[in-house]
Length: 198
Picture (cartoon, rainbow, N blue to C red):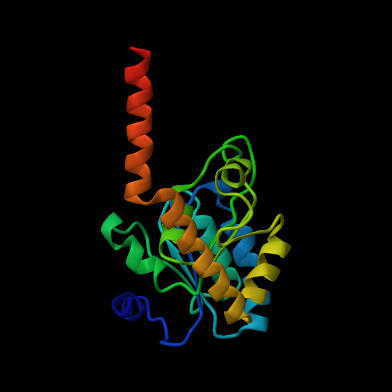
């Protein structure tokens, strides 16, 4: 994490919001960046680290330039998969502000499990596929609109105790539902069921 902080010019004590993934038009990052000045007003030292690339990047860069956020928002481009945990681990909290539409409605973004497995509090829009899989606990704070997402981020940045409770809930959930032992047991049960059916 210290190497990533140095590479991205992140101060040692600066709170960092992290998004990981391909930058599609439904990412919700354009609206999030437009609300980022409100977050900076409340917590001035905050940084936004967007780890990824994609078709939405030029639009995001235009918004960053328009709002003069070049020193507060960094887009890293695509990074090797093996380095993603290091990027997530610089986060004070993570976000997934996806728009809810026909493309995103039923998905469960794998980035969410990566965030939770790193013990990171996550603010996300309540994608039906995600809430069905994870529920409304387990380290995730759901927020419906860009305003709500910005407000939730500010509240969490200002509340280390709340973040710590959510971080522990995230780790507990991943260990309980997604550990190798749990996955192996599920596979054994499926194979036994297939064998029983002949």
